[in-house]
Image 1 (cartoon, rainbow, N blue to C red):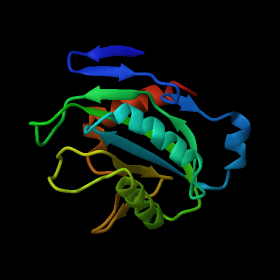
Image 2 (cartoon, rainbow, N blue to C red):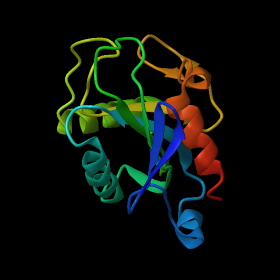
Image 3 (cartoon, one colour):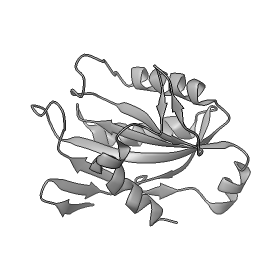
Length: 166
């Protein structure tokens, strides 16, 4: 299902976006760290890639998927000469530290063919840590909360819809 949100935005609902695990499953993961991951991409069939990512993460021993927001199609920023992006958010539970989670998602991006050629350029899959519990980190390799998350519709719109799922 596709729904227009504004002139340059559209919401896409698939079998797993939005999605929410059961209350009993959430209870199993109490005591673990919670992280909000932003996912995006604009090369190839990104919506299908997100569906594959859903199953990849569901089978993961490193993180447990708790919920997913609807997918937002939105225009690029920074480098504008590229296709629209598809973005969503995933809430996960994990025992990984923030740095371990970063290394894990970098491996997942690589698994899905991510190449870092141009800043804000086209990509098969981008995964960002938006939040990790209520902590703040500011190192050379990792900043949490994600910088400029409050300026990005690609985070704000799915986040608002994700909160409405509860």
